[in-house]
Image (cartoon, rainbow, N blue to C red; front, side, top):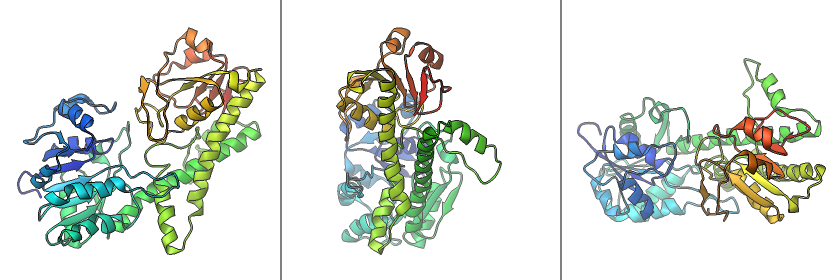
Length: 424
């Protein structure tokens, strides 16, 4: 893999694939693949549509091949293929691997002997063997002999301080030869490659990372609701507990969980374990607690307005932040969208302000197309309630505090004040 310059194909050029394309180009020629023709055009023009990825990083890609294409015949040109397409869940919380299966159909006619195929999309244990290698066997390939198959879970965190190459890379191969080649390949880019004994171990390690977070987020959001019933500030309690130098990791409550991992990935395992006549009670409970938290926030908004003599159905509400976390243009599975949608159903007039979404697009779940409202004294004073959902650093907190009639704070950024600020 490192004897001469090789070519890497990255399939899926979103929040995971695009950074991989950029970073692998430091050591390899690259070709990006995506079925979204508009995205391909933008990348070839050197334009980034992801806020934390500068357009200059795309423009600096140097390769003898096009930066991006929807023509999968270019698969013939690559030595290694990285698959990082979405793996969502259905409304019944079952895995939806349509994108992975479509990729295998698209690349099948163009695969060559000796290529390395690495799946990075989060999924249940067994996917790499069943879907990736299942298709390869249909095409007459044998793992470890004439084609090499690995699983290496993505660990992308939009807006994170960590550089991609500094995040340890877990990898498992279908055979020892697959694993050896995969380790050699990823070691060109990542400073630390963690080899595990099988693809299933690698697949499950990613789920465990996010199950850990999901369960703790569910717990701390439930704790917030309990604190509210006792008229105790949960954030002050957490900060006090966090002074313990061992045995405690602080998690902070919010309006619910969000992002491309936490609300989705744990349910890949809860679905899979049914095959083994097992249950995953903590995962299911975490999901329930997330739904409870979102509904509780809406209830808190309604009761807080009622105390001010304003009916929710007659109110004007401004939501601050639609992204699922601060300082990113990523609203995948954001609790803000659910809250936005449910408030609209009550008859309330609802606007939003988010510096990363000047116009909010239609998503798979929600049709909330509207424009971001400017935050100024006049606008703030015109709303019955301002709801802090995502605490972007660009929000002018003193301005908001001085001119909003009522602030309902789900992130603990304002000091509680019975007159104006209510924690939710």
